[in-house]
Amino acid sequence: MHLSDHTWTDAADVDADVAIVPVGSTEQHGPHAPLGTDAITAEAVAEAGAEEYGEVVVAPPIPVGVAEEHRQFPGTLWVSENTFRSYVRETIDSLAYHGWDRVVIVNGHGGNTDALREVAGRITRHDDAYAVPFTWFEAVGDHGSDMGHGGPLETALLRHVRPESVAEDRIEEAREGASDGWGEWQSGVNLAYDSAEFTENGVVGDPAEGDAERGEELLELAAEALAELLDTVATRDVVRPENK
Image (cartoon, rainbow, N blue to C red; front, side, top):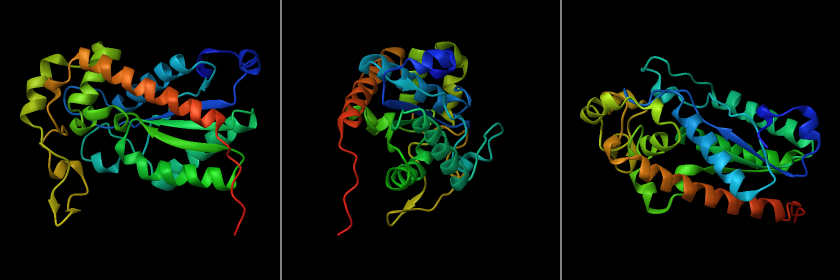
């Protein structure tokens, strides 16, 4: 059940302990993909996983994340890691108050991953909930090696779930200004802090390699992995170990 689409009386009748919180970002994704790509894809995966799993609550997506690395591109929004973690934590606290105290955070933005792992641990250790983060593009098998930014995977999933959002007449422009990889690396260290340092138009990877058919497969793989995770979270013994 997606909370945004139902009444409080509907919510009161839901027989579920598990909830999903989609988390994305509002940031540049090149000249061809919308600023809301990460939130759109996270919510699509959350809804597909929920449909496959069954009785689960889906919260509204959190659309602004840790994205200062894209600040040079107009339209990009960001918050600090502290603000982001607090927002996620308090949202999950609200869900737990209503009894939905086992939560999977479905993430669509790489810049959120470290903060989500940290806050999920803090929630689990200190709050009345158990939370784990799930980043959809890390759960799509061999496709994951093609993950860039506004590249083949995100473009493919958009073409499948929201094709009208992709500016198809700008795909060639996106390809021409793209970089092959994320960052500038030396001795195992990424020397770049902002994406504008290594990509002309914000794109990493070739969006032309992400068609709608591939997007359909990505959604199936991510939804299946999410459903399996939801089942594990629902049945896991989450009592914390005693101090030794």
